[in-house]
Amino acid sequence: MALFNVIYREPGAAAVRGSFEGDSESAVASELAARGFSVLMVEATSSGSWREKLEKLSNVKLRMPRFGASPDELSLLCEVFKTLYSSGIPLLDIVSMTIKETANPWLRKKLEIVLSNLKVGDSLATALSDPRCAKAFPRLMREMVHVGEENGRLDASFEKLAATFRQMAETKREMSSALTYPAFTLVVFFAVCTVLAIMIPEALAKFVGEGELDAIRGRLPLSIKVLFALHDNPARLAVPPAVVAVVAVLWNVAARFRRLRYFQDALKRRLPVVGKLFTQSSLIRFLDVVAANQESGIQIDESLKLAGGSAGDAVLEASVARMRAGILKSGCGLADAMAAEGEDLYPGLVRQMARAGEESGHLPEMLRPVVEFYSAQLHASLKKALDMITPAMIVALGSVVGPIIMGVFKTISMMNDAMAG
Image (cartoon, rainbow, N blue to C red; front, side, top):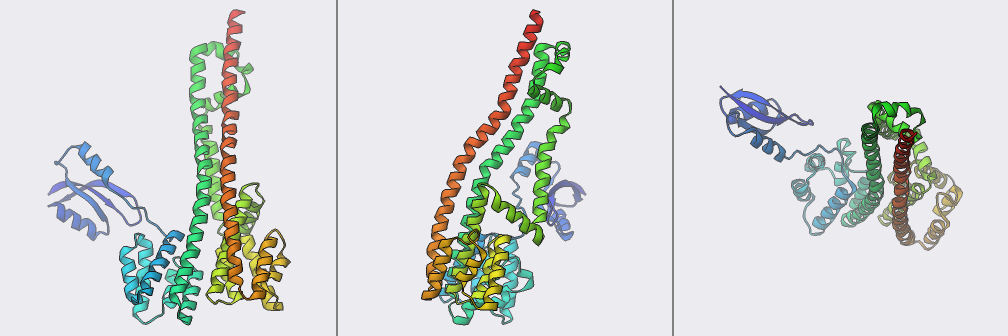
């Protein structure tokens, strides 16, 4: 039996390189596949050099597992469904064609479940409501598909869903782009501090001398003392990134609990710049979903329930729940329920347009201009935030690097004075 170099991957794990004995390459591949491994490469040990094997390893494209569907994917999915359904293609054929073209393997499996449910005679809304597909297809999508099937306007429901998911994707993308520069600058900040803590103490010790430097070490500037403390104990350099990582993990874990998530979102609303962006984006999603639900014929109480869950803001979600309870209990309108919640959650423009829409019977048409207005405001706020972040980061870097440079020159000056004395 010959020895073969193999690269294989266990389900949900990274690629593993090793050696395996077998009669041939096909026999080795078949044996690994029978054990449940995904075979990426099988090669005899005598063929090629290690450089060629490493080049082949670097050319292996590994796809990270995904466990979710992004708003962009859902928007594209709804657009495809709308276009094909309007062309008269049966739902079974639409889902089958979509499965073949879906790049997300996790979403493809969920669509296969939907297809199996359709084959046994379930409606599309029932197929999407399968418990195994709950994370793939939001409740908003399932309810609007159900309304579309009831009124015979499934293509219109898909069109509204595509626009809603597209708006969510654009808002999320804009928020992510606004946070990319600060995150990159923070990484550069830590990298610069690390390099300075390693290089400057060694350069001073080499230039001045260990003995002379120890003699004046107690009188060094504070910035240089900090650099020497970090240089003497390199483990301290890992403390700031570790603290940031721990805070991020704890923040994400706390978001899974309702009460802690409410506290997080209330805190976000109070932040100077981020609070306004977060408030505007959640209000845009809420109003957009309410307008889409009203256009589809969903009742106001169910519409509020769906809109509150899709806002992505626990504070707004709690407010919507109170409004829904008030509407069901007292029979008041949406504008009156918003007025009871206060100006902080629902500005005067939103309340006035909602009142005008209820009085005229055209609530969706009145809410759409409000969504466009606040979307334009959100874009302007994002641009303003980015313009403010750049000088703020420069000042932050300068406040660290500046004292260090001044401390270096002061240390050299102290040594010159000591040598002259």
